[in-house]
Length: 140
Image (cartoon, rainbow, N blue to C red; front, side):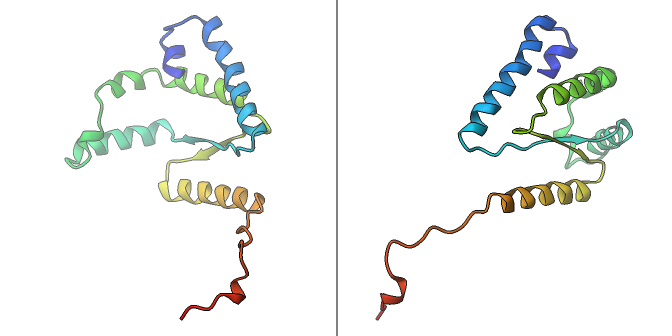
């Protein structure tokens, strides 16, 4: 949706309706018992440049490089505006966004893992009760 918006591939009327569709779909999932967590991994423009340069300079990472990323990088501010809009319009109590500083991968991973652990603990999951009496089973 972001590329569609940034490059004006469809009208604002078309893409702006998608926010409602996203929220409706996520509400449906939530109402059926699905836990939804959305993570926006934010790196700053300097870090993006460093990562692109690292891909070019390391033969084992060159497969990750897309020359089109250089042209898209010129639209950085447009993408930031689009991301902010998406996050604002689709951040709900039942499907929250978590904005994660991601310049340092170890920190990104720690924050995401912490959020996941907290959410999983909140589910209060437990093993199902056995359908037999385990204390009565004898294995010879």
